[in-house]
Structure formats: C-alpha cells, structure tokens
Image (cartoon, rainbow, N blue to C red; front, side, top):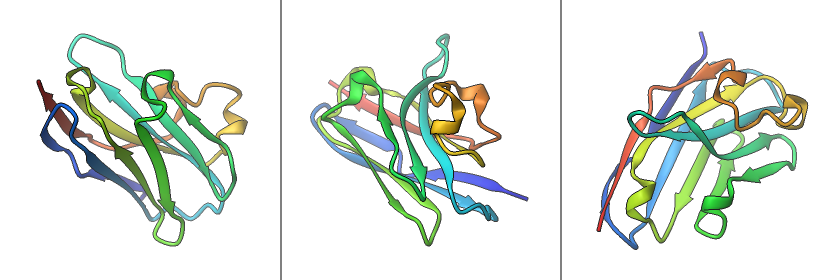
Length: 129
C-alpha cells in the first residue's frame, strides 16, 4: 500500500527557512508527479509546487517563485521543498501528493488537490512576525 509521509515542518520567524520532505513509500512507478499543497483553516487547499519525477517538468505557484525550490532524490522517492525568506502568510499545513501520471499528463490540473491519487497527512509550518 502506497504511503505519502511529510516531515520537516516547524515554527520559524519571518525571514527564516525550512526544508520539507516528502516520502512516497511502496510507490513503484518510474515517472510520476509529486506536488506540495498548503491549506489554512477555512480556505481551499492551494498548489505550491509540483515536479515530474523522472522527467523535467517543474511548476511553482506565483506566490512562491524565488523563495521556494523543489529538489528530489529519485532513488529514495523523496521530494523536498526548500523554503527561504518565509512570511507569516506562508503559515499553513503543507501536504504532499503523488500521482502515477506525469505532471504534464494532468492536463493543467497539477495544482488541483483532487487530481492526485495519494496524499499525505501534512506537516505544519508556522511563521511568526
């Protein structure tokens, strides 16, 4: 059974940095889409960044460009989200999602949470001013 597990969340002051990790265990596809989403109470889950593992497509939401960077360890099926210059508005529960299709095959829906077959339980990020 596939499991998606996030880690690395925490509390930082504005301007600080965090690195989130996502592990997709028992996931045997060679090319697939992994993504980060975030959600705050009362709001819809929004896409942060997505990447085709085993490919080249990478997508970032406009509000994180230049501050958040994806990296991966393909052999370990890990996706990392490096976050710098964090702002209080970045405070949210961050979720990782995985789908057997590549991000391009999602036909523009790579930032739609319901698109993904597997999702994790989330890791909390809190940024204080």
